[in-house]
Length: 84
Image 1 (cartoon, rainbow, N blue to C red):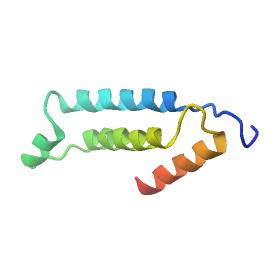
Image 2: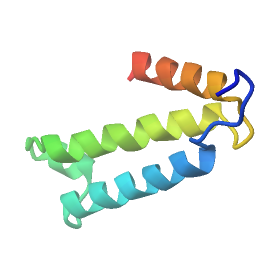
Image 3: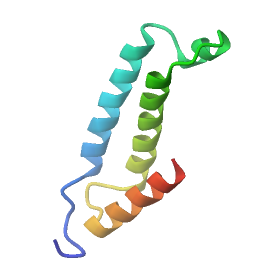
Image 4: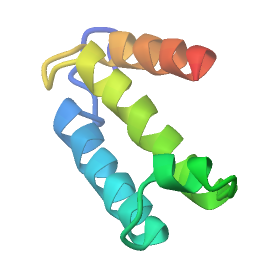
């Protein structure tokens, strides 16, 4: 792929994956919230994992557009991974 080629991974794709992660997070919480679990002193690693995915994909989606060049998409993904 050329350095300025349109990436196969777009912002729309990232938003779709984020939506799926948010849905999984919601299913894992079963009608409660992460805050309510934390206040009760309960730990729920699977839900925390999905929460992290939602946050990371949200950050990633804010850094790119559907027209972002492939090289820049990769750089932004690396930047988000480094801070997550």
